[in-house]
Image (cartoon, rainbow, N blue to C red; front, side):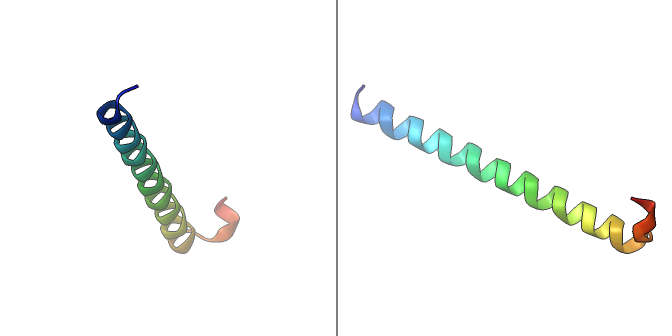
Length: 43
């Protein structure tokens, strides 16, 4: 494994982790907004 390939792999993994974190954050935000709009008994 060359250094460049290792760097690119690390970079891609970092991007994926960041994207997943963003997704989780936005989903969590959506759920809390829904929970705020609708009464808790809705869930």
